Image (cartoon, rainbow over all chains, first blue to last red; front, top):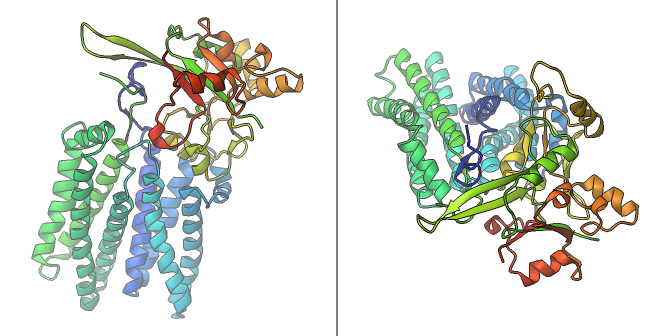
Length: 288
Length: 217
């Protein structure tokens, strides 16, 4: 409970996008970006199941949760009128077009009909869906933890990493050795990118304002330490790194699926921390 | 066209919370909803400690972040600089709540909250639902008492001068710490205060150019 004299006098955490119904938005962003990431990576390996799973994750889970989060959900169609200034508006357009064209592309693919224009268009749209959440957050200049150009890049890396993980799972299920090798390279590259970006982000933010420092402090050694160190670092990064070093061919399928689960948990944990510990700068200039 | 703004003299403010109460009363605001607040802080270390009192409200920024991010066009900037919300268009995404660096927007999530839980709505609450119907699931905030300003101007009154055309918080301030008027009119009292008394805005680094100014001396 924020005391009356703490509110905006000290660093104040945002609550609307993570507490109570805000939990739905956290999950919505995760599933939307994970689904679009799976579609994106699946497209490069021409994997219809990966694209289908991605489309379902993005549309049903992500879109559904986003819909439920809204205070007036049945007015959702109004959210497209300000693409010139609002990232939510742009995101809504990207997601709608992606779901529509992605569905057509998947159905055509099911009947072995290929349209290169449609494929390229859906790949571009899936990438835009992965990236818009990061942009929607990074333009909020009252919260220094979010107000950085690194945030959309991290979200792209994590969305594509998760998507590559799902595609890898599909490759394991299909027993396609060629696809497995190809997707594994993507997973490794994206894992390394994610680790570098995440730590660069955390270190660079720590040199910012008092609110930025408070956010990092809460994540690393404050109330969020166990999520960061256990869920993100050990489970989300450590286990996939070990799996990367052992290689997928010598690893049983069950362990690979477990690794994928760890990867997704780590991504989810990181997104939770970024939302939960987004602090506003204090409003009153001189405080003790 | 006028650009309505406010100047708050922090030296005169006594932190009585009269502005907060007047705002709630004027708009029949439900429990836990405040369109104006008084922030209290301390600066310095013992024995030279200074108490800081900052009344805050929507800044009706010239370059309002909340208006820019609204995906539905529900947040509107009027020609006279007042930022209002069209509840019929608001979808309740709360992007504006996040984008406002001054945290002056509130999500109105529960229409059934009563001042006396379990005893039904009071007559005052019922009148409020008639006169200022808020919509559950939308975002609400200070309107600079736009309805008072509009009605007053129609009657030929001057906002900031005539009480019936002036925001309730300005009228209620017992210390006369609040001034209201046209920032674009160099002859107005608040334009003079801004230029002569080294008025400052909160969070200038956000680049929003608020229409609420503070003076210390």
